[in-house]
Amino acid sequence: SYVLTQPPSVSVAPGQTARITCGGNNIGSKIVHWYQQKPGQAPVLVVYDDTDRPSGIPERFSGSNSGHTATLTISRVEAGDEADYYCQVWDSASDEVFGGGTKVTVL
Amino acid sequence: EVRLAQSGAEVKKAGESLKISCQGSGYRFTNYWIGWVRQMPGKGLEWVGFIYPGDFDTRYSPSFQGQVTVSVDKSITTAYMQWTSLKASDVGMYYCVRPSFYFDSSGSDVFYFETWGQGTLVTVSS
Image (cartoon, rainbow over the protein chains, first blue to last red):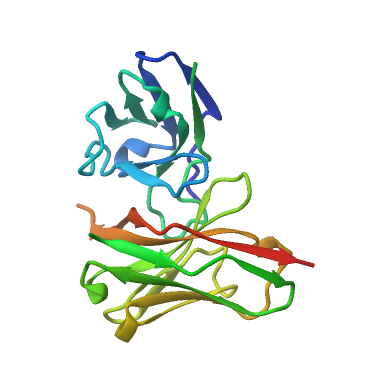
């Protein structure tokens, strides 16, 4: 099955830029989506189709995907961005379509 | 507004059966896939299975195939997931999801999870 690898944690100061990576074999040939999950809440889609944002998601959230790494970038980080973030690709033959998740801590 | 309203938390014993539900509203129910994602305590997200109410086509994760059944009742725009014999390992938060679906340029399926329900917590005691 296709494996997605995320760092367990990323720390960032308010106002700085957070970059959350999602590694996978030739992931640049796949379509990647990203979710934000705050404690005690359901996940929320923040980026789909590598780079698109659903309505209501701030422009501070952006995505890129090339080679073996997809990246979710959060610019001008705010305290409210503290959450777990998951990448996702679709492979119906695989048990695992989500990365393991990255906990973003705002210092 | 698209909304997925899930049934309440369940506490069951191992070996018991269970059926949880998710009512969709705010969209044409038969035109979109609907299904389930699990999150075990303190862990990440796992896809379970989906169903297309228009023709009852179903997709299951290999890990959940044969372990659960996903179904729908179109007349009340409700999706279900059921177990015939719960195990302690079935514990977790189960989120109802409405995936978006299309075929990519190579003709492969693409699913992503645009809308989520509030979650149904399933607790199983042995």
